[in-house]
Length: 119
Length: 109
View 1: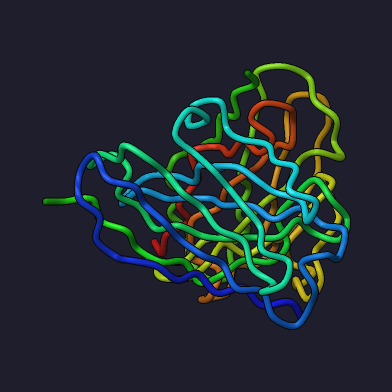
View 2: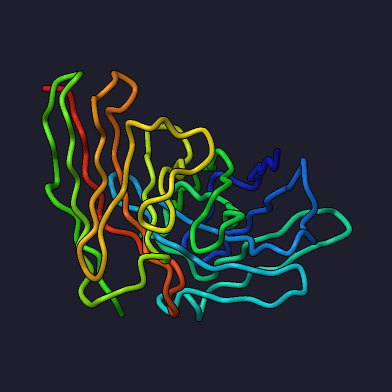
């Protein structure tokens, strides 16, 4: 059973860069699936940030594309998120996820990590 | 960009009752691309339904999905105490690839 675990600083200063890593266990990041980041601001709904394939190919949400970089480290079986120029609006629980085996949905999720943007 | 609108915003029901949640797309979509998730506070979203009507692994059969075109429905046959949560529909399209509805909260009446 694939398991995902997010890690990274829980507090980021405004105008700084948010950096998170998602460690994958119970399966290989080279499994032929896409790996995503999704976030949920407090009291709000889910927002997809972007995804990456083990080859390094990426797709991003156009609303965040100018500030987002997602990368993959196949040797460590993990992938990462960087979000630059953060503001309080970027405060959210950030989840990493894997597409479902059937495709077109997200079947495996990490537990999420809260990132607060504050000075 | 296709917008998903979920209704109602909140559904107040008692355990044992039937819950019917709606998700409407701003234009016709492929049923293959529609999914439903359950979200509880402090927990990750849980995939319930994919392809509009197929239950994900381990999902009880009281959960069912239906619909086509622009209108999709998640039905919970008889509400169990653990079913009180927020439910999101999701669409897989291009740019952004995954779009979510704003959610329907199912609360205990």
